[in-house]
Image (cartoon, rainbow, N blue to C red):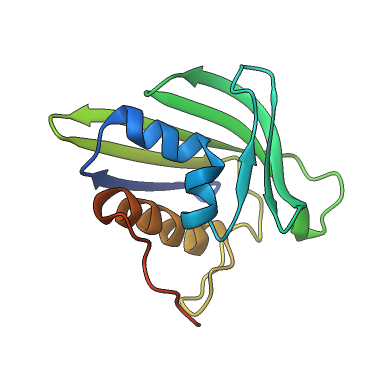
Length: 151
């Protein structure tokens, strides 16, 4: 991992199709992604938004779509308060391995402050993404998300 990127890898007992649906459907994201709904037409060049309580929290432009294999998009977090900040880039890569899917998350082109060196928070991409992906894994494998955590 370089200073300007974050990589997280996990293995999920699911199919690429089910994982793809979970990454691209509000029916799932609202359960595992801090209550966020997701909106896009999933075409390269199209806009993508994550919203909480009717307010856009994160947005970007889709860079690459290979259904059930690769999803890549720019990422801007509305709440960081940095005007004119260049967007970072998120890539989900799905690799089938028999009855398991290897999910590789890459969040690249990070800026200072995107990573938070504390273990008592979900702030920072390095703290938020593992919580989100762990919740996704639990949802797909058990039908339930992880119990709420207070930190």
